[in-house]
Amino acid sequence: MQFDILTIFPEFFVSPLQEGIIRRAQNEEQIRIGIHNIRDYALDRHHMTDDRPFGGGEGMVMKPEPLADNLKAICADDGVDTRVIMLSPKGAQFNQEAAQRLSKYTRLVFVCGRYEGVDERFREKYVDEELSIGDYVLTGGELAALVVLDAVTRLLPGVLGCGDSATKDSFSCGLLKHAQYTRPRIFEGIAVPEILLSGDHAAIARYRFLESVKLTLERRPELLKATRFSKAEQKILQQEGLLTRIESIVNEYRTESQVTG
Ligand code: ADE
Image (cartoon, rainbow, N blue to C red):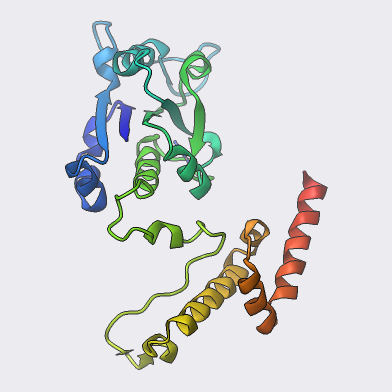
């Protein structure tokens, strides 16, 4: 996959993209990342990428022409399956489902907004979607672009060492991931759960599944409304007396979303 990032702070990306799995994915040519300085496309004498807002008000607005010229320079009509994404607190909430969806494109272009925003005409004409990484305001879209790039990259075939690690992530199957343990067997008086040392793979799988369900019930019960349990899983939940509780929570959220939606 090709990633292109349009930013006025290209240096911002140097170190984060040179570490761990993202570094390896570049070395193995599973991903390519182009960092583009929007300022290189600001053709006035002072290379201005921003200006005062029409109608007055605080702060500066990013000008549309340098952004459009930058975009055209990197991907004008080359037929590559491209998605142009603007990072902004006004965007739709980024989540694992969005990461899965975006991982199917051949190229993702991230436009990192700064200041009070980006000229609306650029968004209208060139941006396919706007994404936010959470309900808080960052100083710009750069950190958000890194978050999306990271989450998408680890879903690409062959990027994670072990083939199926991404399928067992929190969120991928509608449940939070169970707790993990490694050596030593006893740490500061706390022992690893006995069953994990038993070598009984079926019992361990069952234990971990139940741990995931309990954790999700405790911390993010609303996720359960989208979780699909297999017949075998439903049987385990029934045996553990969890099925009715989950069903009532799901109904509660359904009714709530019917009322609010
Ligand atoms: N730019 C500023 N805040 C942001 C956020 N929460 N998500 C994405 N881009 C942003």
